[in-house]
Image (cartoon, rainbow, N blue to C red; front, top):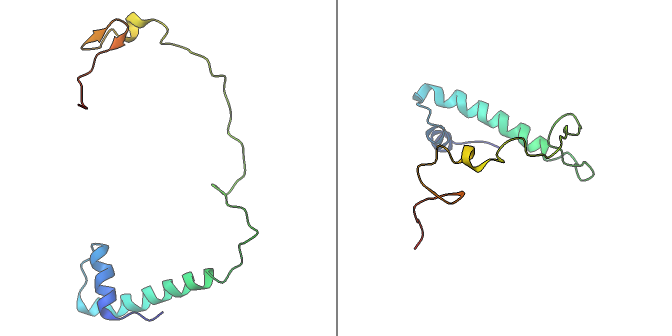
Amino acid sequence: MPLDPATVRRIARLARLRLEEKELERLEGELGTILAWVEQLNEVDVSEVAPMTGAVAMALKMREDVVSDGGDAEIVLGNAPERTADFYAVPKVVE
């Protein structure tokens, strides 16, 4: 995909790159090469490939879901600036 100098300037501005005019032609060729590789990737048939979240398929380690602390309201609310019974008191933010 050929790029014109105006497109390269816009991409550089979006990437917050300051380019000299002499760098424009070199960057134009490099970006064209990158876009050609991306176009080649679109030709690969991935319809039967399952999506994955990582390179290695593995299950996460699970732990028991038990309360290890927080059962004592006095300790938990000890640093609260304001409280109402066993709850944090917060200012009203929605009318």
